[in-house]
Image (cartoon, rainbow, N blue to C red):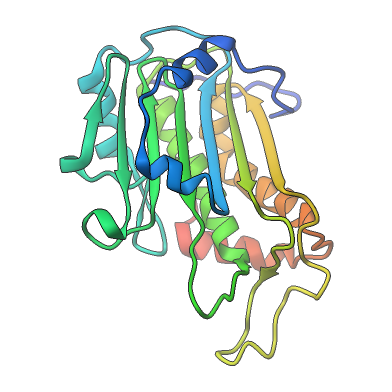
Length: 255
């Protein structure tokens, strides 16, 4: 489905509101052991939704399932965004969902995502933890996550009617005291991020809304801006923008 032309003027702005119907849809979800595990630890929470609620922007659950499996984004780590394990996809009355993680099957990052027929997408996902990071958050995980989320949103605009506008919210939760890192050698002696690049708040969140055509036309740029805003909330005030743009292009293509 054509996303439509992008409008003139500001391409995106802060999210004005989230319709209460989306809250009700999330509230009716059944309990999930994976979700309950994720929210007790530092994690991502990402949501994409049209600002005008309609119950069936996806025609049926089969279309939801097909979109999630066929339009997931391949990330530089090799893990798709979102992860779709067909044997683990569950269906409810108005949604499809999937729990993934190393303890549930093939090696993967622990996450739970839900896609409603209303086109509300919600993903909760643990950070990429490794002994080398020692509890820090890699700069490129932030850039990769924002870029993949905007690419997924772009693909949604191409498959589903999302007018008049679409919103995206990216949150990092339980990150108080966590530091950003971009090590330049295996010994972690050189790091692009300075000592002050750590978060004083429990939650970092950025939200934007715009016309679907702008997501399709400028999603890569918006993803970069969201990543830069997240860095700033971690106290990293002088990230090398040109270098990060080149890395984004190299990892995801020219898009």
